Length: 80
Image (cartoon, rainbow, N blue to C red):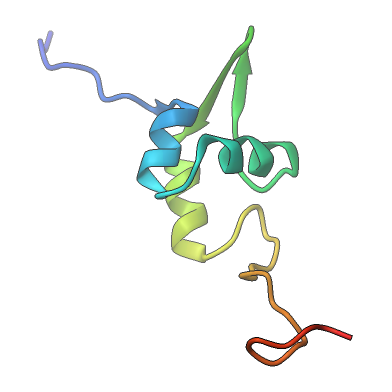
């Protein structure tokens, strides 16, 4: 038997927010919209590390296209 510590397979919402440099609110919204993979155990929400890394490496959440709030208006202008 090995006495090596087990590697954690999941992250909390707060840890995920820190790693992605965003707020916990955005993580909860991503979960609600199906953009961030998660497990719910009782009232605890956990994010599988491997799926999160895969999502980030692929540049999207669960196959959805990414955008940074693309606007049809020119910079500084208003969309019509």
